[in-house]
Image (tube, rainbow, N blue to C red; front, side):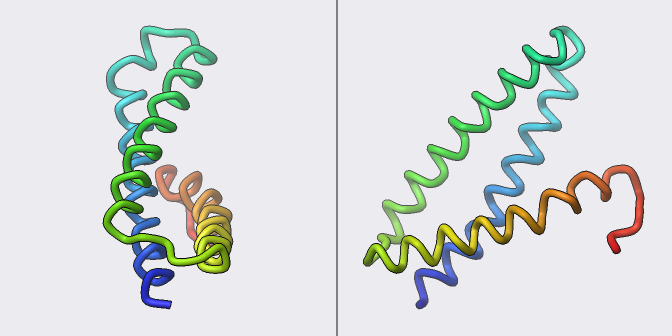
Length: 97
């Protein structure tokens, strides 16, 4: 159970990576590319960042079983669904509710 909690906490790092990736897109290359191309490049960069982050993290904190992996994946999914609407409202200054 300890690993599950550690992995839940690690999700925050991925949320931060996603925000940084979006900020880099907007500040550096987004204005010089067509919207679709900038989105595709940002997606590729995000996949690489997430892949490296998860690879390093899973090397430090090994997942012990398939059941534990499913619990972690399910919790990450729930957290992503909860985060997505908030991430769209917060930058615009709209209320969270």
